[in-house]
Length: 347
Image (cartoon, rainbow, N blue to C red):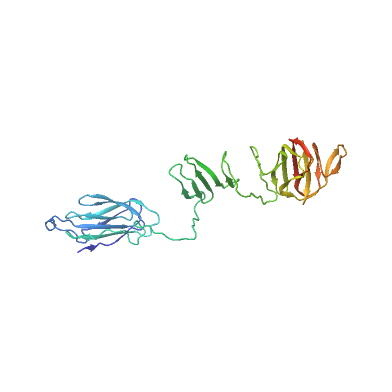
């Protein structure tokens, strides 16, 4: 008949701590004459976070007993104990018990199964939580570390900053997002990498700005193309917020047809704009289809120049339109091919 030995509580064990199942004191020794060819079995269940190096005392048979493990250990006649030395300790184990059952010679031990309801070893326990909390550790403590074997640490979340990378098909890590403990507190991308905004970027603070500290600004803007009788007029609206910049390039552009050609701006100018134009046929600025008056500089003077009002400025001129507009129009019967540039700046 099997006998359950007293459970050993190993709460508080550290590396090097020792304990034993004493077989002599509980009367589990016998004369070799009654053993025959059968040996008694001690079934050991380590329901704890401690991993042990173990051995039988008399025979000196050594074995390992990891955290959460079971073992069936055959005993020689006259064995007095099974001894344990802690090799490692898992943090915060919910259970810290060492248990054993003695089976007499010839008795069949109960099967060793999956580890029941114990969270030490056996089946993985899962649960659903709403909040992951890691509070109170020293600043700079690594909380989450995710990544392949190489290069490793692709996602690193500390308790006061973070670093997020992606790994290319060549196994090279590229930083995409970093939160720092000192300014700049947020960084997007990395040097020599392209960062693409699929939506709009907005700066809310009145005194803040987008600053280019080095390199060149490559503002593609919105492109609008107008086909002429020959060539094209291509409008590039690089800035179209409250302040706007529109550049129109003429590529052998002409209008020799029977009606005006119009180029609708993606965003209308609501107040006014100054202009500068090079090689160009005449043009107009329309608001809801109506040509607006434009002041063209005609006199330069130290005390102040003068302008002449017109609705159809021509080539090689500068001036200002003091009204809002939404369309650039090119009157008909202008067959000369032009290759200049029109620039509008305003709001």
